[in-house]
Image (cartoon, rainbow, N blue to C red):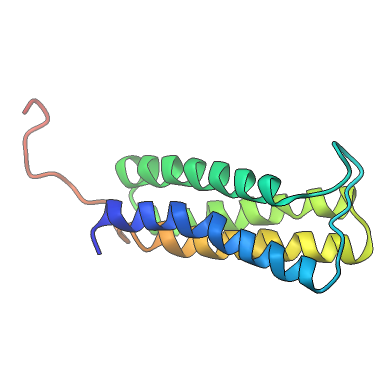
Length: 134
């Protein structure tokens, strides 16, 4: 699959997977209650967050492939760090089953984004054979 096609697919799949996980969580009877905003996490919140994260990830992937020597290695470091930091939200803003469910939503979205965009990055920087002035 072409790089941009895979990135577009990831941009569509991440919110779809997150929404599917949200629906499963709701079917299991877990209310996603947080201590900010409206107090609940709805479908629109989940889709919006996944789209924003996917777009930001696309930007980061593009920067890495153009500006670092080992893009995929940096991708793994940055995204694993980002996922770890994202766990702070559910840890502080929710309790019990809500926190566990929200952490699961973060993992589902991250798995799609990390694998989707990461698979489009080269292991090593691809150097152009054209002169810099061309």
